[in-house]
Image 1: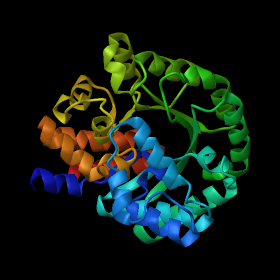
Image 2 (image 1 turned 180 degrees about the vertical axis):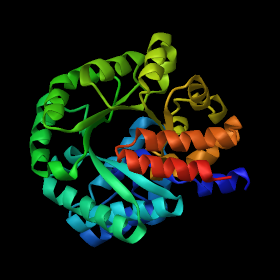
Image 3 (image 1 turned 60 degrees about the horizontal axis):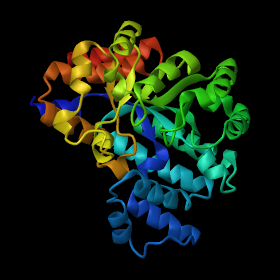
Image 4 (image 1 turned 45 degrees about the vertical axis):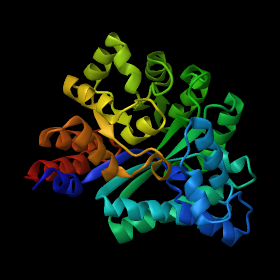
Length: 333
């Protein structure tokens, strides 16, 4: 098979996707109309134009406008189900989905409403599409430590439905150290932990995520390359990085995909993985990210397969499941 056929055929695990960032314009407009929510766009076409943002703030403006239309359990179900249909198209067989309860609870939406809708979609995706999934609850780092503690407390009633907690939103000025005590309490409660670090923030934030939050994975982490000692640690500890190439390009972490460091990191032995982040805003889902780096970086067949294997190895599925998917990847010719 040629490279495009290989990318489509690869079974994939996605470890870095924000469910609120999968909100396609058509669905946003439909739910806004269904819920009779005023949004500053008169048509699907106007929503699509707004999605063509040029900086982080304009992205956040449309991102939160979209979140505002999500009110009922069915809205969260529809959002997640639409994402699972994209997974089926791209042969994503396992996904670990970030959700931001504070984005919704701060608007008066009950935590229960959010997670019940998402979990119902996860269950249906497993039954109807044969896609397994986990939910990862993220704290918004631009909010306070107290707000994070309150959200963690709300999550405890749904411990069996949430595999991990994470840390996302605006990175600069909100170091992982701000949430050291919250993450300690989360680990004590039995949650796995991940954190965004080293995307727009410095390599020092990756150190903090490792040493203070004691994470199981680093989300993004592309600036780790700026610190050779950190690089050696990531390699030695086989610490996964959930890299999001199209997101990095859209938010100007890199100016050109040919400058992206995912291949260099892979070749040095870092356990890098490919993910879509906020795909409806950043230009593509999983296969789009694979196609973009394969073309720009001239990736080999073995490099593509290794990226896919890394994701399963870095996932929170069982060792038996990891072994099964890695063997399937190795079997692809």
